[in-house]
Length: 352
Image (cartoon, rainbow, N blue to C red; front, side):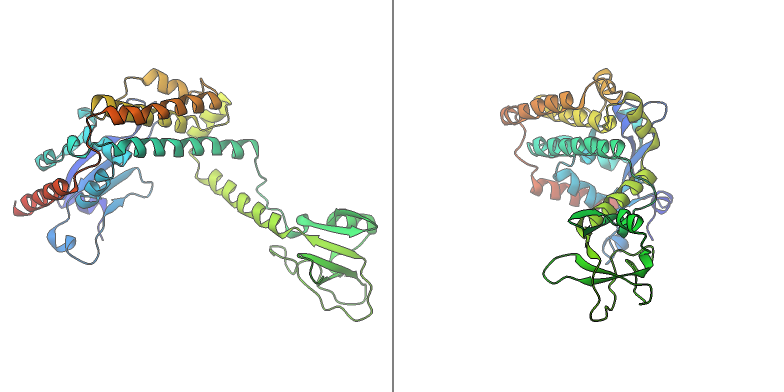
């Protein structure tokens, strides 16, 4: 099995660098250290059936890409990979001389307009998606099927529990029978002597249960189970508590402190990406280390309203088409030249 340790210990690592906030110059005291690297597999592994194109640790703080995968992502102008071509020198932990063959001008192209901007606007959605979770917290104990049941009786519809309480009914003595042609509707029967199944068979059930109803029994009302609403609720409940379990607590507390109800770190990266795209078009290079640190950290610290930032981001995005059109960048990376470079690197590496 190919692991990070195996790659390093067997001398197959050709590049390793600190990336993320520390490379951007946007790190704070609580920032994590993200590391990305490139490795070249030995021949016998590279030509085998199993080709491990990338490996990482459990938290994905450290990720290494096999040379072919690395170059493939560069040729698509992937923003996270493109920035590895120009990380600050003090962030480079190791660089094999063979990596000098991989030059940013070979990959920089007008594709960056779309890849950087599209990734930026994905972050906007992530940033605002947090608001729904912050302002709509969910109890850890999940609601039950019965909470989504309503009874129509006496010309009115009332929640099941209210109906049971007002009528003094025991839920376990209820029996349900489906009503033809009415989705999720059931005639509801009650008896002290007949062994009905109740509303659900067990507490964690995800649907109501039916009973065998003797002929001649008269229903006490009609029950409607909002099954679609229950399904949506269960999905959101799971998503919410998965988010609570996995969320970055420091980022969450930052959001709570500035009270803007959006993930301000995500929004900071929206502008970093858009500004990097603008610089690629106007300067023809990737500026990883940010000279606009104060502005970007101002976003992270909640200096701006969400709607204000979205407007600024859209204005910046709308500038990009003309800037890239006027630039001298190639339309897209030249795959023929890239393949030649890739073959040359691997050939030289294997010969040595």
